[in-house]
View 1 (cartoon, rainbow, N blue to C red):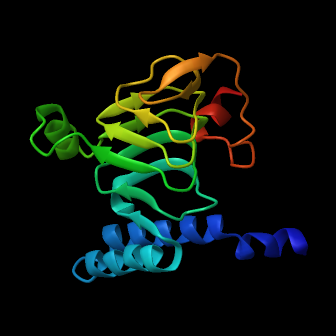
View 2 (cartoon, rainbow, N blue to C red):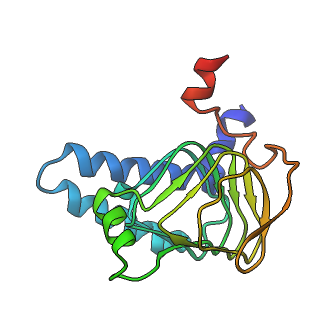
Length: 183
């Protein structure tokens, strides 16, 4: 019983549910849906401090256990796998006049993240960037270029400090569909 009631208590499941509802409203209800989706997204901001445009976040399994001060915005965040985002993380664009940013924003894919990606508290990811599988970005780091090698990255700008890494931050999330097919 406790195992079934626990998800109802966890903020993480509330956030995922509200984001799923917002995306569903946006896609399936023609006229009123986008406005209702916007209201759901604003309720996430009021209730949890999570500034998100749910229709632009397409992540296989997103973990946000402490949503305070997180900015996921409307720039387009895509991942087929598991992504854990800690408190205070910001996904931002370089400049509204940067041609790479404008092209990526037009496609709706400013940030491409792999599977088993963890972004530490108060980090800033400046897009457009791609982050490969099995990456941990330490707290208060600045990611301003793509990360193509797995490992642990910290600093301003982020630099790789270690290669070894586990999936302890995303182990509680269901495996992405791609990984389930490979087994």
